[in-house]
Image (tube, rainbow, N blue to C red):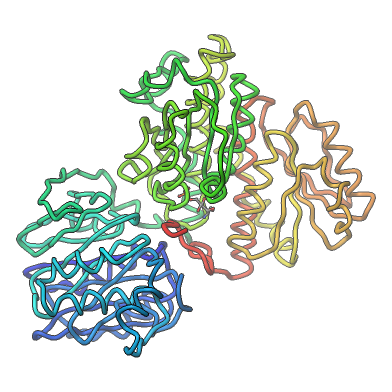
Length: 607
Ligand code: AGP
């Protein structure tokens, strides 16, 4: 949520800020702004809308050696120029902020009752607070004093007119890193914004504050004690920031899935076994003493959790619960002794998942924590006992695609390791490893449905609503298909376990309601067929994604798309692919912003 980029250099930083914002736009795109110090004055430029709206108005002659910039996803105050960051106080202090100041009204009433605030944001109050403390303190102390008043989460970068060489930054609950250069140092919410300038990063920890100039980086802990943080080399490639000839990041990422899955299993399957060492050095902390699994996640990652629950119980005989993190964190739990917690998160920064993880770590009955995550340096990856990285490569499209399929692959690897003490025999392990190894080729063949699905989308995109049906381990896939469709094409879609239709949703089925069915050739196939007959009998139009052996034929009411997905546990991964393509092509026809759908952001670092 919101992207921050900043730089202090011996040269002009304007292009660094503008390019950085473009690469962070996936984090929020309702307004953007930049503040620099030039001739001892703060100059700030802001625009509602995408980053290009801002860069279009930037004076080509503008130069400065120091500046901060922001792309916003609105929380407090609607998207507008006034609410855009940076917020400037008294022409002295400019700040950009990611996160939420929960007690901003209290702060406003305590300190600024008489001040006319310009915006409706929580962040402006923090700018004024830092400014007022800066009257009698140096800027670092002013930031410390101001943050002492704050409840909530933040990553901030602060410019002080009277201190034109340094930027003060701080983080608590929202990500922030420092890019290390030669005669230049950078700040950003994530490494994408800076990878074209440096591959050396310092990941700030919660509670850290830092002062950054072109020559020096000084980091302090919560008590203002200087601390050293390791400089890490990133292997992000410049390529991951480009569409590589595809029209959209989402399409590129859908087509990258064979490679992403291959990379996720690589070196983790050895002679058809999965060694426990894939879970790192802390695996023995929980491997021999856990007896049930609690998974927490949000959105698409939660759908991966739902399928993992099926797998854990069916294949390994391990009891499992899966819960949405935002619900989990606010209810009382009866935690059984020996629970292993698994957090699934593409970004590793999702606020609800991170906070649920931190609660779990306070509770004695949990024996360990495992992260399934795509970003090795993220908070969730760093804070779990074990981390299984999905090697999907950076996912830029807001709609999660390759992250989801690689999460499922990583979860299957995890289940094999966890299940050896339970029902996963050597024979089952071998068979699951073989299935995983065939996935990249099978995904490639499933992608061949692209043209057929593009044709289908011509009809589908006219619809206002859609129902998605699945049963058993394919119900999470139907849910994911519905989420994808609504997220990027704005067609209202709901998923139901097919057996639930007659308990209510059948009432909305008529000739205007397209019904998408996920139809593997498995034990509940005949049951599903009966459910689909109920739809046909009400005049509902069916679009069935079926295994070639499931025995469906197209007719005037149903259109069948065949997938070669043999009846085995990894089949749900293959059924995901056509549903991603359906959402993509509908969005294209509807002309929505595929990679940056309205009202959303990629990394949800606020509650
Ligand atoms: C998926 O398409 C979404 N954009 C969203 O549901 C996402 O999966 C969710 O916000 C969780 O993100 P995470 O995996 O980074 O934690």
